[in-house]
Amino acid sequence: MSARTVCAALVCKATYHMLRLLGRGGTSLPGKLALKIDPEYLHRLSRGVRTIVITGTNGKTTSTHIVAQALENMGEQAFYNRSGANLIQGITTEFAIRSSITGKPRYRLAAIECDEGALRRVCKQLDPDVLVVTNVFRDQLDRYGEVTHTLENIMAGVTNSPHATLCLNADDSMVASIADKVDNDVIFYGVSCEIYPERVADLSDATHCIMCGNEYEYEYVTFAHLGGFRCPACGYARPVPMVAVEKILERHSDSCVLEISVDGESSAVPVDVPASYDIYNCACVVAGLLAFGFSKEQAFEALGKFKHGFGRSEVLDVNGTKVRLMLMKNPAGCNQIINLLLNETDEDMGLVCILNDQECDGTDVSWIYDAGWEAICARKRTAICSGDRAEDMALRLKYAGMPADGIRIIHDYGELIEELGRMGHAVTVVANYSAMLGFRAKAASVLGLAGFWEG
Image: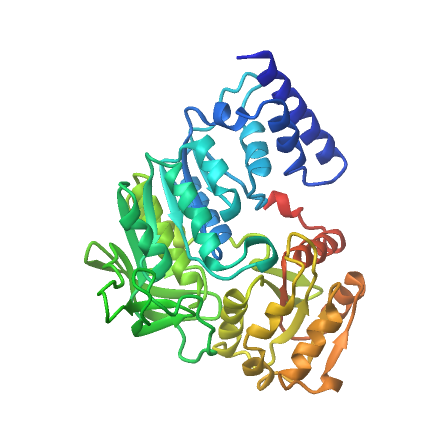
């Protein structure tokens, strides 16, 4: 190993441990410094590690956590980027702290969540064994541009993954189209039924055929542009998925039972997520684990023993108040949180919306006007708004029909947590990324919880 690589390792590990001693996550800076010293550092660290990479606009964090849970259940020597640091710097840090100074890996398997914009560089260095693509939605327009640019980023990552088995969402017309452009082995997964008894009307990010430009027809829609699409002009249509959720057999507040078909053989599978958009995560996990060489039984077991990660249906106990954290970051994902709330039986569920406009969120918050808050404001007449853009969020709820005197603004997270502890009923906190980080960090301090990078 070269002196440059050893130097990169020393700097990366020293920076990581220093940041942890200071009580910070230390997820990105160590890897950033290491890559400046040795641009091929991640490639060197990943040699000998079989890797499954999960990317896409929504669902990649939860899906990665479930894959990691499956590997843990099976007693495999595996790791994942549990902090959610999904750019090349953070991924490099994750590999570095699990390798020796000389670059020898301590684990043989890795499940890696990867940002779509970083996929090109990450896949070039990792050469993954499996690449899972969840979906493509409009997200952070100031950073990504339109959905076609996001699809181009993903396609570049696929091109840099020549040995990977691709697991593609059959219900997303853009994602499914990738299969026609590559020579990789492909496993399609999808949801072959409607998810919600009641749902808000979504804006579609893919109304017209990606092959010929004519408008799609749909046999059914799960949400947004996902579902049983078909182009009447050229015949491009939803491919038959190898892994499919066929039915929702039981619905509970925080779990469900799904009928999942693998190669045409159906099983009733208890799943530790509510019957919502997370069903797609379950389907992609099964596909990913099959491609990674594990059995469907091992995948099914993980779905029933899943511990929710940072901000993704994570539940906190605040002085007896059940507080559920839900991450919102774009119209499609936000609408699915609204759908979840619309289809729950708890009429007293409180609502807190925290909105920031930091760079990691996307500085343009106008997307909140494309989400269907009207449906939830017809049910809920009170809410608390917080964050740097609390006033913008409050105005959106007012326009959606919530009475102005039912909306409170609490900027201070400590004060907000005290108020939650006095609620006397369950509360859902909906927040974008930096807002979730700030709120969760304050809650961790007050409640004595682990840092977000630890779970």
